[in-house]
Amino acid sequence: MNDELTGQLTTRWRIPAYARDMLWLEIESETVRVEGERGLFILTARADVLVVRWGGEDGPPLAQLRWQVDTLGWDGTVRIGGFVDALHITEALDLPEAVTILHVGGQPLKPGARPYPGFDQRKRVPYAVPSFFDSLADDIPEGVTTWVAFSEAPAVFLAQDALVSKLRVHCFGSLPDEDTGWHASFALPIVLDAMSIFPT
View: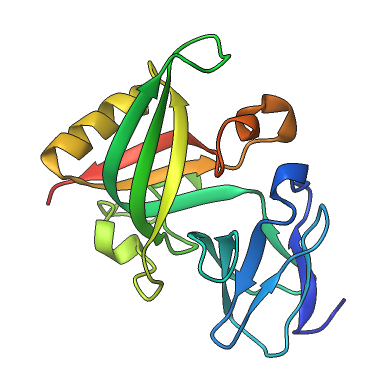
């Protein structure tokens, strides 16, 4: 597949069965559905940047990726910047503890955006403070994503503050594997792993 029009979405990560007919790739001129557990795709035009969407060409954007030959190397990670529009807490599901669902309106973060300097940036001083706007792929129209976390997770407390105070957020998470069971309850199950909040 060593060309500029065909490839696969993932490398090691296998797309869970519940997500296999829900993932699409968008470039400026078209949106195509990816196929199978690795997300095979064929484009009709070359693209340097691609957007992973959920559910179709009008579905919420999950990630912005750079073109790479053969595989885009996506691992199911979702990184969105925007606002927490609503929270729902429930104990009604067959889970060991209460669950919080966040509805986040926003746009994907750029591929290189980070919430803090990693060890590989140790010698790149001075370290920059993360910027809400600089990290945002602001050329992609906003979409609404749903995020799930156990209600005692530290990020949930940040989400509550962000909702009440109308603070901007960066949410970090991933599509869960099939065996976690999250997909049995949620149309778009993004597991919330971390969150950054920014002043308005």
